[in-house]
Length: 308
Image (tube, rainbow, N blue to C red; front, side):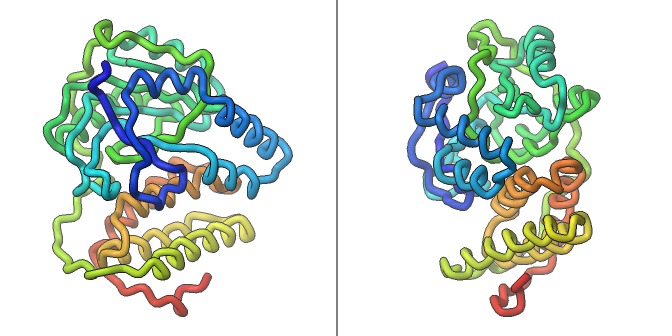
């Protein structure tokens, strides 16, 4: 369906302006047969993973790949909820850290006619599905459709609730055996569900900062990066992530970044952390809960006080 269009971005998730737009089926074909340089990057990432060179793997993903936001179209100025111009009649659901990704791809694609496409991650440990839904008229409608299918799919091991965030980045991947269904052969998922309890909307009001310096933005990301290095050194995560997420939530309440932006980056770091991978679902729930809780107590970023 050529009129389902969304933006693509450089893979550094803190860069908020899109590079351009792509339609749904062009994007799906790019997963089946990426450009040669993208294939080469995935092969290099695989080598770095096998050799344990996580620093090289992280650099390759951040500098040579792209991500998309398929469920929305934005104004092109940022990637916040307020930047959303319209919603697309699709959402992504995914499963992570599973040993049956290929089997699940085939099973759900054949079982659910609402699935437009199913594909696995390069690691072979994750499955993603593009699902057709009625075109949402609001964020609430999107969340209701997501919760409806989440109630059904969460019975399967590895279901990831991260896509409750409508503007979550989806990184380009490579699956030559991607399953793609013609739009006219799909039937939209229409069952709605109640809001997931851990995702309570913040209803308070804070007066945001008039401007945030690039230096402060860079230093905030440095603090996060250093905190994840600490997790790897100390081989413990829950306590550290709880405090970090509360801190980020407070900064969000003050207007440094949106909750969604912090969530995107923290989820990205969890996925890249060797230690956090074994409990990523629980860590992501902690992050989400603490971000919203922290946002109720805005705080000013003190550069010297936040060296970790």
